[in-house]
Length: 346
Ligand code: NAP
Image (tube, rainbow, N blue to C red; front, side, top):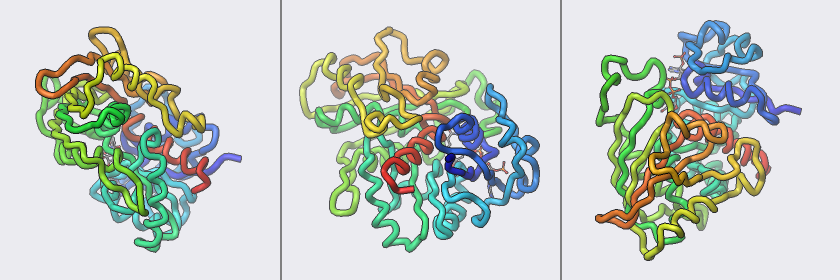
C-alpha cells in the first residue's frame, strides 16, 4: 500500500523534481500539492511552468494546487518552499502533526533539527527526540543541506578517516540552483557571477554539522575549517566544486581514491530505493567530472570526483560534481524519507 505524500512548493524547480522522481516511486505516491496563492485553486498543469525534459505525470497534472496550509495534506510532506516563507509554513505543518522533510535553509542549523546526508550521518535522526522535547510539535522536521554542501560533503566524508583539517573550496553552480525563472539570461549568458547570497556561510557551517558527531543527545560539529567561494555559471544542472584539503595523515593518492570509491553508508546497507549503489565515484579520465557528461549518473544521486592531485599549499586537490536539484535537493529529501521509514520513524 503506497504512502501518500504532499509537496509544499510543488510548482518550483525542486518541486518539479519531486514530482518527476516520485512518479514511479515504490513506496510514495503524490496526492497533494501546495504552493503560493498565485497558484492555489489552479490545476497543477496550469500553475507550474514545467521545465523538466520528462512530461509531468497525469495524476499530478490533474491535482488542484492547494494553499500551503496544514489541514488536508497527508502526514508526510516534502518541502521546497521559497526560504522567505518556509520557516513559518513548515513550522505550522510540524505543529499540526506532519513529518516535513525539507530543502529550505530555515531549520538546517537548529540544534534539534537533523541536517541529513544519510550515507554520512544516519544516526543524527536521533535528534528528533530532542526536537519534540524542545518544540512540542506533534510532527517533525528533517532537513537536507544546501545543494553545493551536499556535493562537497559527500566527497569529504570518505576523507574523515585521514584527519580532515581544512578545506578551501570554490563552487561553479548551475542556473537551476536559483529556481525559476532564476537569473536573467542577460546576466548569466557568457558570464560568471562571483556572488550567491548567503551561500558561502552555508557551505562553511552546514558541512561541520553534517560531519559532526552525535553524542549525549546533541551534534558536536566537526572541527574542520572551511573557506568557501561561490560562483554562478551558465550550466543548466550540476554544481561543480573545486576543493583543496589538508589532512592530518600523510596518505597516498591511491589511498584517497580507494577511500572515495569504497565509501558506503546506511542507505546502501538498507538498499533504499533512491540510494545510488556507490555514492561517490572517482573518474580516472583527466578531464572529468563535467556537468554535461556526468551529472545524471545513477539517476542524479551519485557524486562524481576527479582530477585528484597534490596541492602545493594544502595536501590534495580535486573536483567534485553533484546534481543540484536531485542529489542536492529533491532526491536528498526523498532519501531522507526512505531512511525514516526504514528506521521506523514515519
Ligand atoms: P522556486 O523555483 O523559486 O520555487 C519556489 C516555490 O515556493 C514555488 O512552488 C512557489 O510557489 C513557492 N512559494 C513562493 N512563495 C510562496 C508563498 N508565499 N506561499 C507558499 N508557497 C510559496 O525555487 P526552487 O529552486 O525550487 O527552491 C525551493 C527551495 O529549495 C528554496 O528554499 C531553495 O533555497 C531550496 N533549494 C533549491 C535548490 C536548487 O538547486 N534549485 C537546491 C537545494 C535547495 P508559486 O509557484 O505559487 O510561486
